[in-house]
Amino acid sequence: MDAIFYLLQSGCQRALLPHDFPPKSRVHYYFKWFCRDGTWRRVHDALYRRKRPLEGHEDQPSFAIIDRQSVMTGPDAHSDTGYDAGKKIKGRKRYILADTLGMLLKAEVHSAGIQDRDGAALVFDRLASPRISSGTQRQASPSSRPQ
Image 1 (cartoon, rainbow, N blue to C red):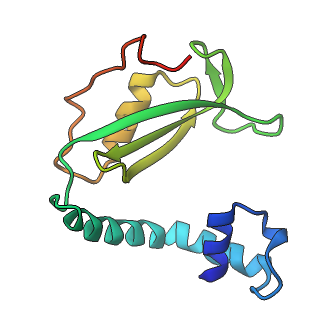
Image 2: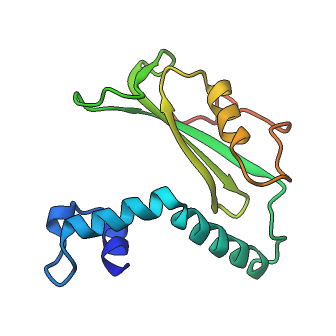
């Protein structure tokens, strides 16, 4: 677990793991295994449910904030890429859904060719919180958007 957390926190390549950790192939195997079997999701959800009451809030949020970012992909990326005509970027879009405390609820990555409203709908469709609906939506005004 320490080796996996080291990779996640430092963002280093697997080949650069310190020598006192297990071999990189074993660390990568367990990381992928935890992704596939839902261990990371269960850990996130358990920590999330414990943190909200400590901040004086209910277990489940009633409001969330969504943002998206178009990201260029490298020349070797072939799957899930598209063209975002508004940003003039070929690549992917990242959607982040956070509660009002700034804690992550959901993160999704899609092709940049998907319209923003459709990508946001996919994020809300896969959301586990029954209290949040996609009914309250507001876009930032053009003057408040970064240039």
